[in-house]
Length: 214
Ligand SMILES: [Zn+2]
Image (cartoon, rainbow, N blue to C red; front, side, top):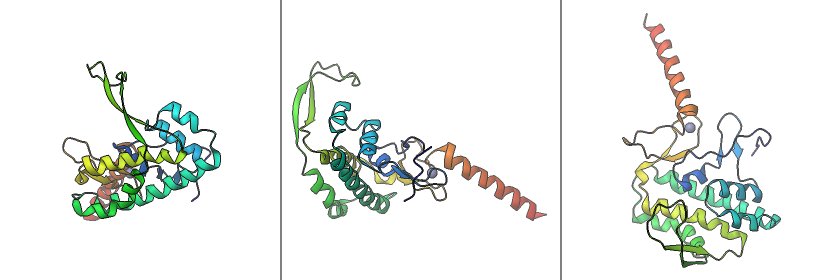
């Protein structure tokens, strides 16, 4: 895929769910397709921006060059596999029959090395409890960087409502999102890109049809 590395925009976070933001790491916001996970460094950058992996963990993996590039390759494969799953189930209910399709995800999740700890609450949380039950991970290999992504996918599949998983209606737009709007009427990745484009097209069509009426 040709990418415009020079002046490319920052990764998009319009998915309203990390699993869908992950799918949106390849997109065509204007003319040229952009790949935001081209190599290991980019994968680390994205995981940090998405706040899926702690900064210190990211830093500890920065010097793992070739190994990281391999993981980025695996991340792109995981992404396209999940895109297939999400596209098949978007807008519909995701029932128990989907379990068979999720075997690759369960296989990946089974590799994890997580354990529990009692810690003090993070500043982000508003809990009044002085102690927190938290999940930690023994980070030993760069491949584990796929785990927070796999967790996000599992969360969407088990806690999300696939009726609200949508593909942007913009012409040629491949972005997906979770519709958290009150009336569940979200149609666009963003109003400023596809929404306005569609409005302008509708306006032009109205003018044209109005002209033909006479
Ligand atoms: Zn769009």
